[in-house]
Image (cartoon, rainbow, N blue to C red; front, side, top):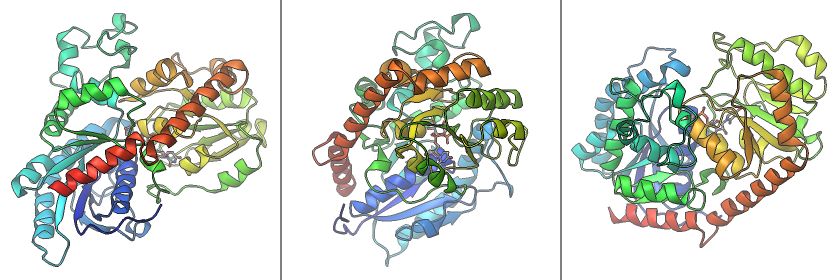
Length: 452
Ligand code: UDX
């Protein structure tokens, strides 16, 4: 695609500094740059993007007040997001005021921030700049989060062990156990964060979502009604343009040459995203399940994946010897390339929204093992709505894993899931083309920004 003529307006984007949030925000920045806007990125020192990967954007670091060497593990994300909002409010105002008063720079049209940067609504109001939000989950998750007070009122929450398998009538086919586990009581910090996030998103001028209309039509109308501002589903972002790198860890490209040597659709790609972790027992069961399945596998064992191991985790030699030639293990993979590789036939995922959408739009069926946040909702949609995957809902145990991998990769059920996944990939491709739904919503988004 050719770069559109320059519009002479600047859009300022503020990503939340976690991998699953940085990726979509940087893809969005590329799309808006392609659409004619100049791009400025305000970012924290913590998990800073690499400016060298995006020479066409200007980068503005701000102090984040976090102690040096802060790291994100599963338990500490909520306090981290709270601390970031608290610490960065002043720096946002100073940085934006400076940009607004710079007469030599292009005028700022609007601010686009992650929904979790809720404090930026007050900053935007104070400086009289319109704020649009980017929501990095699915429409369904956003609708469920907005409905948490209602779900509590109706008695679904707080979650009770005896009710977990029961349906949530307002959000079929979700079950009570799919509702995010923490964040469901008044005093819970996650509940407070989510309700502030929803409140400040309602005060924004629009919501951009990395999804597409055809994927979640009913949840999209719920979000439209609930939030009362224009909604722009313009995903899958990464397929609009060739994405520029945005990984915080270095992707190990040796896995691509390993994939090149594997038969078509034979490899199971295994990755649990950037935050979720498992314990040592689960790791061992996973490893033996993979080996015993007899399928070739590419496994991302990222530093910190195994709870209690901060650094790289050593995969036991016995496992690797048994799987000789059939296994490739890396600390971080170029996931988009892996998913679109001809040898990749399935994806065992933690069902983070980016991974889910990337797999759907590459036509790769999924083995879902959700861990936290919105991942149960994504997995439920993959298995029960789009029917392009299966879930392991029980304790991770090697026999069950072996069985699930075989169901996903071999036989009639696998073929049917593959066919449905190929149809979804087609739909995703179509919606990005001229006249497609995401393409049209992008045009509407550009018009809205131009109208400010
Ligand atoms: C978390 C939540 O799970 C997710 O649902 C929420 O919307 C954002 O925060 P995360 O654990 O990072 O996200 O998972 P996911 O949303 O799947 O994002 C991971 C990203 O890292 C994907 O874009 C994926 O392509 C990339 N990745 C992952 C790599 O590039 N290489 C890898 O080896 C693993």
